[in-house]
Image (cartoon, rainbow, N blue to C red; front, side, top):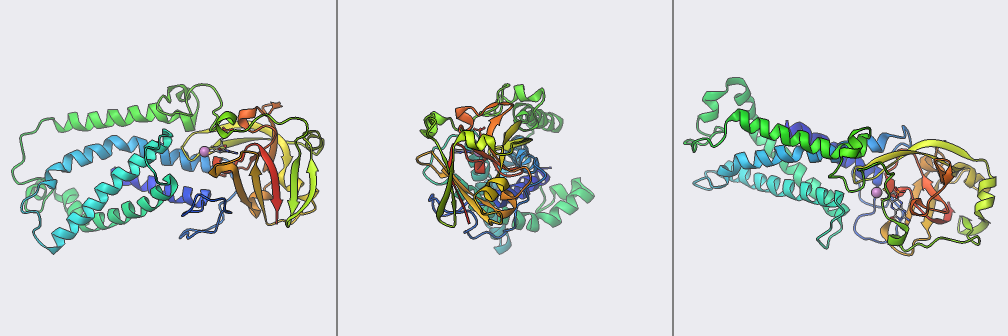
Length: 371
Ligand SMILES: Nc1nc2c(c(=O)[nH]1)N[C@H]1C(S)=C(S)[C@@H](COP(=O)(O)O)O[C@H]1N2
Ligand SMILES: [Mo]
């Protein structure tokens, strides 16, 4: 069961990396897609819930798997003190991969949970560390399962005799049990159910949303704010604000909010789906990005760099690829749920692109550069 859950977390994790497509190695402002990425492909811009589903699975399944992971680690603790520590080359190999596996699991689950809690008691870049950690963890997992596969198959086939033989799953003279199998499995199952109830609502909504007490951005009725304007050091702009549109390095037009509102307006129900796992669907209205490109005289632009009024920070800019820029529902949103965009949600204008990680839905847009 742990193998299945970890498999889901690994696959959705690598997919998330492809969708986010961050630049690794620096915190600098660099267009997406200029990095070493083994799984480079164009992340689709539909269906709109794609990233919400992916990331909801990644975070929820990861958190629900924690009690099972701890139970597994607890059950193998005696093996840590095996004697003699190394019996053969094969045994040494097995122990080294187990070390990478245990270390990788603690690192991946630990950094993931800390990120969801927006708590960073370290000095490395979370995205980079969690990504390279995933390679260590997954490689060790493949090697570990590979070396243990024959034992697994035998154990499922013949049960008890093999569990207890030499090289079997149970230590030769086990300590007296401290808990029954039923009590142990029941406890782990209850803990997993509890973790589900306390987090899943942040992505699946409904009545569970109120119960998502472990989700710092997802609980309650409100529509979450990732970073407030105050946190991002963005003040309310006045009537002099203009959106600058630049094509191939040449500034072609500046539009006031009134002028943007005079362009054809579209409304779509679209989610914001954060890498931290929470998502929320709202009704966004504004100008289609494709219409803006046409308005700027760049109807066939192959990408757009979006820059925020926010003075600093990794999320103050994004680059949208052609399929994202030209998707039917991609908007420069000016209002949400029929009301003017609140400052914390990106007033005077923000990006909303379906199926994209929330981090690319840049708030407080000041400039868009089409190329
Ligand atoms: N300028 C700017 N835009 C931003 C961010 C930011 O920190 N600065 N955070 C992003 C992230 S990570 C998410 S999940 C969404 C959240 O949007 P919301 O705060 O309106 O819910 O905004 C995105 N846009
Ligand atoms: Mo986010």
